[in-house]
Image (cartoon, rainbow, N blue to C red; front, side, top):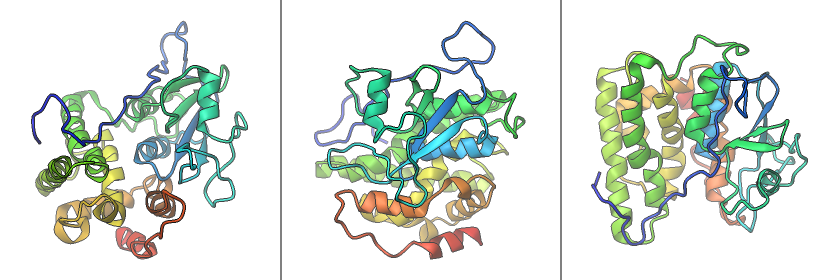
Length: 306
């Protein structure tokens, strides 16, 4: 990955999250205290950042502790996430009765200047947004509610692996998780080619790691695997075509990554939090009138489940 202090001309730059509070367990004086039933998660199954949070909610057994609503897989004409309960797998807003995320952000902060993104953790008692930063949400889900979850012993960020996990997260985010977006949304050839090279350098590096290890950090599932899974799952059906990352597919070019992807998909919680129909329709139908490819449908899921 190139070492640079400023983006290239035409390079896609992701905006930072605007809400960065934490839910805590040991301090009753903090604003957001961990309690069952108090918090609500908003996601879109299309969005990989949302996918991370829904996946950890499944893995930890938070379904009865943190409620969740699912927005449509496609944004509106004015680029807003909206509720589409007529779509299978989507819901209404069961907390505020809002039509989309912009209304929820305005309830939390009428003057919020940023984009109304997902995922969002909402405090139902106050109407406040706790966080819209997926990396921090999954950390909260990992430990803050352990008194009530069904899998309290599952630790996705164990103390003895934290340095390795943080290091893995740093390069996989820049080169792969966000790298595919840097390729897909680049507005210059130079920026696209830099991102393209980063993506496949990351895949090569992951392949080498998995040739020696079952997981990315140590011998157990961690948040590093969760974060990589959501991108790997989308790679062949979406990023290879849509984001012009068309050098090599995971299935045909990376035997260790393909085996790893299948193994994760068959782990309880992964398939349950994944909706390929929402993903394909969301990425390929962005303007509302684009053709959604038929390939990589149920046959893709069947191959992962073998």
